[in-house]
Structures are given as structure tokens and as C-alpha cells.
Image (tube, rainbow, N blue to C red; front, side, top):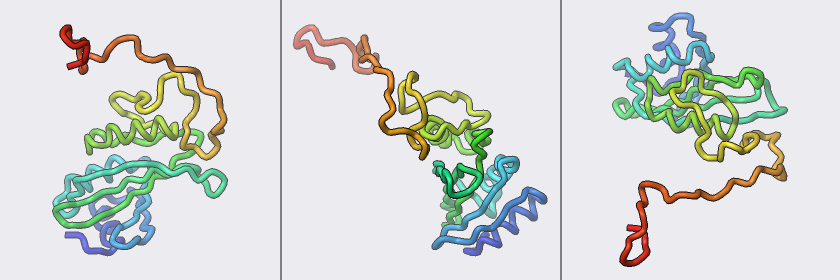
Amino acid sequence: MITASTDSLVALVDARLPGCGLVARGSEGDVEVIEVPARSLLDVARFLRGDADAAYDLLDLTAVDRLGSRSPRFIVLIALVSRTHQSRARLEVAVDDDSGGFPSLTSVWPAAFLYELEVLDLFGLTPEGHPQAHRLLLPEGFVGHPLRLDYRLAKHQPQVPPPTTTPERIGPARADTGEAP
């Protein structure tokens, strides 16, 4: 079982996956913060999910744009929770502005599916290997990624026409009242 020390989690992963390049960044409260190289992310994620000594079974994923403050520009943040061991960790993956990609975690945590689409849509960072990479929150004609710090708020966007058909889940109008069911 993992103790509250970040060094112990890094040591556990390094012992089982030598050469993966983890860097302990300390802890913030009870959250262990670890920097993971993008090349090792999938191996580390599989270990943290599947190993009985880690058993991180819950995930949240987002990104941060650090335009002008540090290089690389983007950090993908992966918050993990182990309900078995009552521990939390945060993985930080640096993403270069030129490549704009990071390995998809959908094969390890299926919940990453929507989080990764959100990061793709709002930051323009591509989850490489994602089964259905597409816009999630914004229309297909939307230009740019609004959570990037260099996105112009006054930018003109194309008009999106309203839907011309009633969505299937609502169904047709009732003949007797003219309302949707």
C-alpha cells in the first residue's frame, strides 16, 4: 500500500517500470504531484490502474495554458483517486505547443473519453489514439480554441443555423395537443 509520501509512489512506479522518467513534484495537501513524460504516460497509467498497490480507479483530466510564463506551454493534468487505498495523485504531462498531442487514456480509464474531447475542443490538444476525436462542446465551424490564453474574445465566429429537424429523442409532436411527448 502507498503511504502519503510522493517519493513512495514514484519509487513504487520506478521499481516496477524502470526508466519511465517520473519526477516527484511534491505534494499539495494529500495529493501527490508527479511529472510524467508523455512517452511513458500509457505505461504509468496502466500500472497505476492495474497494480494492487496503487489501484487508482477514478480519473479527471483537464489542461492548463501557461502562455508566456513557462515552456512547454501546456500541461495536461490528470487527477487520480484510489478508493481502495483512499489516496489521491495528480499526474502532470507537459505538451509542446508545436506537437499539441498527448497519449489518449481511454484504453485505461474509459471515463477519459469525454474529458479528452473537452481538452481537444477547448485547448486544441490532440489525444493521440482517441477512438473518436471530434469537437464536443462547440460547433464544427467554430474557429480556434477558447481556453487558450491567446484566443481573441472579440473574434468573429460563423453563424450556426438552428437545427432543422426535431431530435429523435424528443419525438414528433402529439397529434392531440401539438406538444412533444
